[in-house]
Length: 145
Image (cartoon, rainbow, N blue to C red):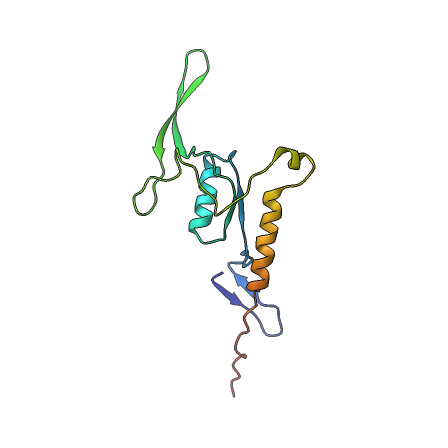
């Protein structure tokens, strides 16, 4: 959220037009790799909320070279890696570790119970209670005489 704008006797609008001020969480697990490794890492670093789940698999390496083979197949070669603003290599071969560890159990999932989703709802409901979001009130419109 950068700003609001409004007209007299109108509803306030946001700038940018599409933005959320809602409390958010990110869910992830051991199946997440590549962009699935990067997304929770960025989510956490941007301060968007806690990450819930299990460590990602740590396959955050880029491929930009594709070599064709004579049989019509191709070979890809990982040729770049991600590092943070402090110059440290991140996520590759390590994975991203969530703030709140919650395992998914196959038997529970088969019955329709998603422990990560339930934890996310619990965390969000607590955050909403502790920090309710309020729409700011603007000053009165100036009146020129």
